[in-house]
Image (tube, rainbow, N blue to C red; front, side, top):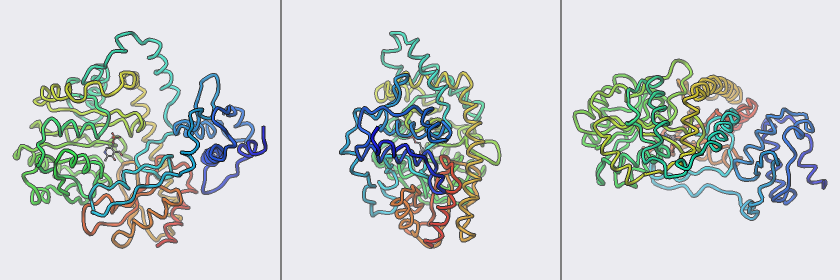
Length: 479
Ligand SMILES: Cc1ncc(COP(=O)(O)O)c(C=O)c1O
């Protein structure tokens, strides 16, 4: 072994700002970029390296799994882990940078939708990747592959695998209070295809759609792609302000809402507002799409029943995703369609989305749910996130020394840290991103000309309170 190769695996030091797995991850990346590790080189086994470095084997496995998920390494099972032989070294030399930000407030915001090429600290929207039950997943995957019949190699059923549709229907009944049959559950490849499905099936270009302000930028973008005008409706402590929506666009075709935890401010939509929204939809023949992207994660009390569970007039489409409860690259979601719309969605879905999600993924998830792993995983994650959230808040506030407080919120996967002054969040978020910390500026999620300023940061992958304290210090120094 050459000296630089050995340096890559020299002992790791406890550093407050960088957890051990991250240090190893960065070293391996740097060694690959510098040519010290070449495509095809064999990596030491996790067990051997853990022994060598005197750290837990899980630390090495976490670094390797991140490197594998990003394509630097290739896991070859019994044959060990190697530097990916397909790696394009020139591509590594150019660090990815966010595309330029746009000028129109609340417009398509590529800088919010941009994702770094590697997972960065505090990055939004990613489940705890270190805690995913990989062994169970691998076992179910291997079992599926071994038992695969010729019929499993044909196109999947257009609306999803029956076993997955019924597993989801049972799960929703118990955990979200939604009384639906499996035939109402349409499998999609996540939120964007669920919303696109509704737009294709029911909406006419030129119409208007309420969106929450601030709200998920991708939702506005998808609606525009369908020729719909997103109408920003303000949110307050009770969630979307329905009376404001009626005053702005009472004739809208659709309202897109995040009732469990408003995205991104995390408050729940209050019961009176839920009723007002359903009344508006019923009396105006409007549709409501409930984006329940992280409703399972509530820490103070049990998750709230879904808005769809209160719908007596068949106006609400419930959209769920496995991005948050499993992991984002799975690209699997579902849409629960009111009974009276099922025939339309069967027709439109057959033509449009037939067989969009691989049978294998659907089958593994169906087994994962049916065998009880899903419910256990959610319970474990709820506990873990509760702990990580409390630790991150405490450490951030230590670093902030009382200058700012993290906004209390009942659930979700990220925190909101309010800043003084309009749009002061943008330069700060940009500066932190340049330092490799992926917090987001709330004002970039807003359509308002005078948006509130806050930083949005996820705690799900925050395993180091020291890192959160350091972030608090950096923010305090920048104020
Ligand atoms: C508000 C909101 N809805 C939905 C999603 C999930 O989208 P997808 O299913 O495409 O991963 C996200 C992901 O971050 C989100 O923040």
